[in-house]
Image (cartoon, rainbow, N blue to C red; front, side, top):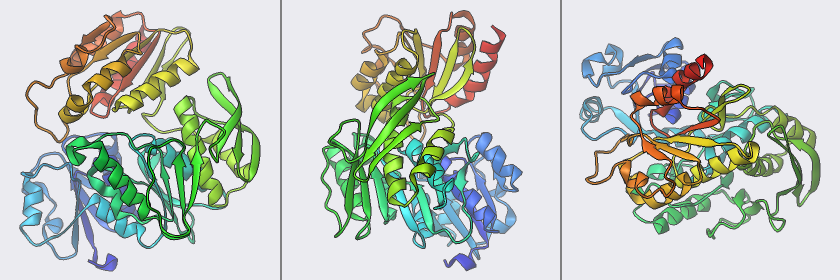
Length: 459
């Protein structure tokens, strides 16, 4: 379906972070937009304020009448939708034009010069940081983000007319990133994940290799130094490595922490950029800043623009997101849902707030991920002073026999561990002597965040 032929766009799973960014995009371009999601959220409420009709029950009769006509209606769905979904099957069996989220993004991206940020972790913060660096500079960009940027207040960034750079989060789930053919790609990490899709780590690496192979000739690959990963690249693609070690092409020196925030010098093949100040805390954010800076410099921003952009970057909602702070207690919320992400989160907390007691509340995401990484989750949660687990958030999965949060709890060596129901968390927070509290997970644990903040304020 040609873009001009599209009159209406219906989203099956409109509340997802990637889906909602597409919904905003089509609203901005004058298309009628509606959709279904399982539950209401801040994202869907914002969409409704934009005039998007959203409902929360899987019922064909709730689809607005105009959207039940296949003439001029495009259906975009998330692969997380179950196969038996009533509305999805209505569209599939009624002759509608139906595409996955990744295909829609690829369709939009095909007319632009794409900067794709990929990695099993780190991609949302890096994508958002790169978008801010470019968007606040003379270069400019559009962007589809995998989180809500605090600077932009959205997961969609639109530049002034005439700009043709599109920054996108290149998601490896369901091999979605293979819909993109970037001019520049960042690869932050290639750990084993989404084994429900890939089966083995080798297949994960194979998919990342295919993605890197789709970088256009004479483009750029910005890659973390030390990844056990050697993709076959098109002719003329320039590889730029980054990391904390001096044999990387881009690395920091003269690092200091002042009030939890990093000051550093950026070293690159083009020289040094001194007196840089990163506007968000956390060592993993410093690493992400190296990747974003390398890409932004390759796209032509100046040293002064880089300095200004890093300092003014406010971060991403649910990424090292300080929700509450007083003289005695600090509460941070984070999206970490993979063992390596938990490791990075806990390390960053201890870096910024040394010698403090850190309690983590973690909601495992997916039965398959819990099964595949139970040992690794336990090892990462053992780095906390106290580990609290919630029940597994199933997302798109049915239960797997024998796989529960106890699969992780039983492997944690620290005796300061427990499982709580979501309904018991607030009472525990109310009665505990909180020093530093961190909530982590990709499920619905974020619904507890404002309630936890209120409890802490009342103590």
